[in-house]
Image 1: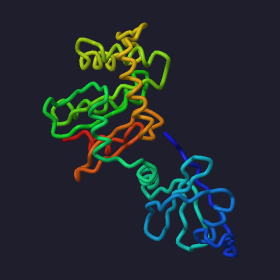
Image 2: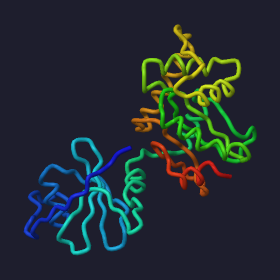
Image 3: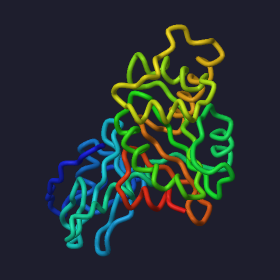
Image 4: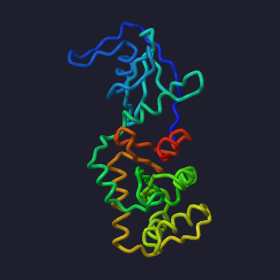
Length: 252
């Protein structure tokens, strides 16, 4: 999970654009641009604020112009209840385009399904066997899968530890992959499912293909959840999800 340290940056109104063809931003934002920040796109912001998706050294940076137009905030905004107002919009703004071709690629990936046999909703989760947050998400999703119409397809990747590939292969090649996954997760940290010492070449290619798919979607960590919302739009959420998102995604 990424945390941002919020800080105020105050600038005078005298900043100006040096190049004739450079975009004109409000003075506080332009001052940040002069210091190396690249503005990539608008960012959803609360009423009265103007949000920008910035990039600094390859890292996404949320920037907000305050209502007075003379100050900029770099970092996370919270409301009076402590709700994070930045993570969701930042995640949406930095996601690659997800279309039906993406959904088809996910369908053809090497995954292990659990939940409904005839699902009304399908959710893909990029899962590493050694990832503790993948395990937490697995635990949190189980009550919804027990009696719902959702099928979760675990796209098995190997990005966490040396044994990730061997254990992913053991699950994928098991006589009953679904049962093997459940057995592994129920004893996470002391898994009875041992990593394969010699991974079959075909299985290794399946896992490598999953890793490549993960990279192509700009996902840098697990778990990563890809799903369709109520309007059929493909969405992505990276990391352990809060309870309300889990219910919205996995609930039926």
